[in-house]
Image 1 (tube, rainbow, N blue to C red):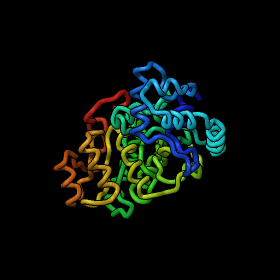
Image 2 (spheres, rainbow, N blue to C red; image 1 turned 90 degrees about the vertical axis):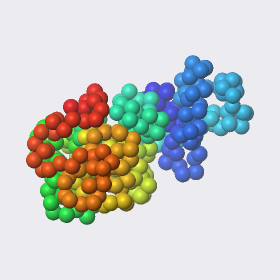
Image 3 (cartoon, rainbow, N blue to C red; image 1 turned 60 degrees about the vertical axis):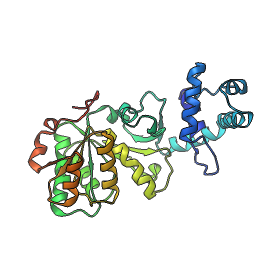
Image 4 (spheres, rainbow, N blue to C red; image 1 turned 120 degrees about the vertical axis):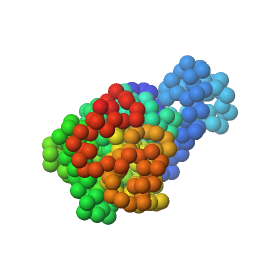
Length: 297
């Protein structure tokens, strides 16, 4: 791990301690902007009090930043804990941090993604599947088809590992010999290692499930996929609706909804999604993504 990566975690992470008070995202961005002018890396663990004063910080804030950077033992303990359960960090300043997340979310991108599994899956073409937990039979068939076709056509499937649509698509993809990225909202350290699966968690590897974490991780799912398939959705509320409408407003990626005749799918179409049938999945590449990145195929 580089000095910049270590410094980034020291400044921005709770490191497993809820009583620790790292910088907020806004405070870190301010520090980054000021540091660029000085020409010294923002996460440099060798920053000195004079450097921070020269950046316009008062003594109290400057000392707080330095104290955060000094907690090397806390960081080492947290990293060792993560490593014992197979978890490793990808920070904003890490070489392997997914470029599509940085490009599509900008300053709002998650500062650290903890991963467990084969990091090489992030370098493959990806499509995403989202949908309801309580899923109807025909919608389940669509989710199953997305997983199967993703595997057959050389795409890694990105989903959220929730019951219902997510797991249906994931299991179908793996059964067809494909690869899956699960962006989880619960404890990454407790995910069982599995061939052809990469698990990802925002910010921490030991965070318990919460509704807020579940909603937040949806943007990672939507940003990683060049195309996002919606198997089922409830109009006006729920995680699938929230994540998909944010995607359509921010134009992160192209959205394709299963044409099931519901008000929810019709509303998403009015916002810019495209409704498709099962047969349209036979050539995913013909469903052109809105924006082409390096691995959007």
